[in-house]
Length: 160
Image 1 (cartoon, helix red, strand yellow):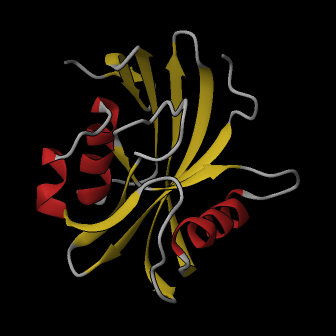
Image 2 (cartoon, rainbow, N blue to C red):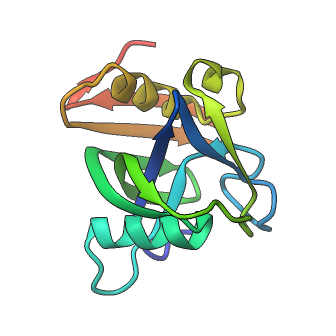
Image 3 (spheres, rainbow, N blue to C red):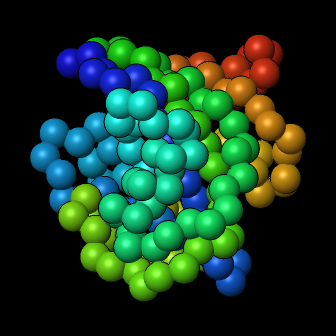
């Protein structure tokens, strides 16, 4: 199954030393099944990355983000799935009341507990980069199934 729309957003909302994480347990045929990720999704026709991020945050959480920080462009490629280009954001400025999400369970997770979750291996790479306040970066992650086979940061392979 190839990706229909290869452009997506992923946002890590930050509050009190925590990230808002989505445990993807609800959707059928979900490439992220049982994984913990930030919130976000696919662009709709005519949307900018920021418009997509703000809409997806609201749809999935009920929160309205008022400031986004564009942190990275992440290229995912996976055998049998295709390639996805993800605009990665963080935000610590939002309003509203958290609601239930139809894609899984939302939970504020302390940043120092994130590594204990079931994450994609490559997510650990970009979470480390954003937590160290790295400047804007481009990261390519190549997967075979759930296994990360290659990671390239700003055009340079990362050693495993």
